Amino acid sequence: MVFMNFDNNIGVRLREERDRLGFTQQEMTVHIGISQNMWSKYERGQAVPGGDVLAKLLAIGGDVLFILSGKRSTTTLTDDEKELLTGYRQLDIRGKTSMLGMLEVVGTPPKAATSVKYAGTVKQVIEGDQTIHGGLTIGPGQKKRKKTL
Image (cartoon, rainbow, N blue to C red; front, side, top):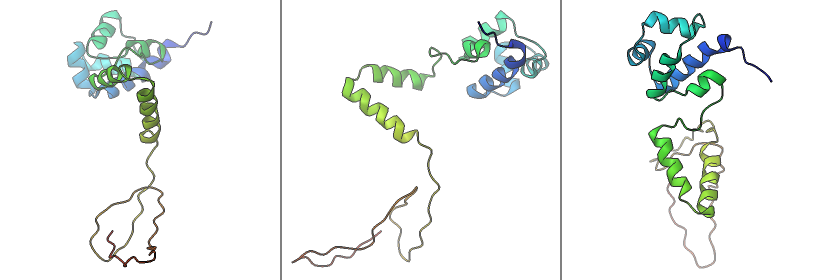
């Protein structure tokens, strides 16, 4: 059995959790009911919060399992995450497959935007690694059309 060094990691995880919740140290201390000096000691690893502090953290949406073990809880979800999960669970297998495919697409980090100089009105902004074909193929009996970007 492997044991983590709780005292060395708790401060880092408390800070990560406070950031995830979107609180400053001062805001966190108001929600938890402790002094800012004490919270600062927790984040620096100079003190370990007791059960009452962890219970109050849990009550405001904190992931206590993460603080204690370093592993994220799957039960501590934001309202948005709960709504997505509820909707996902109601889908059939095709819907779930589509959603997972969409996550792969939107979860991919965006590539740097490419600037294109064009003398005229820009009607579309294109980002990422794109190939744009500027030529126009005219078939028999077709008239050349004016193209706009």
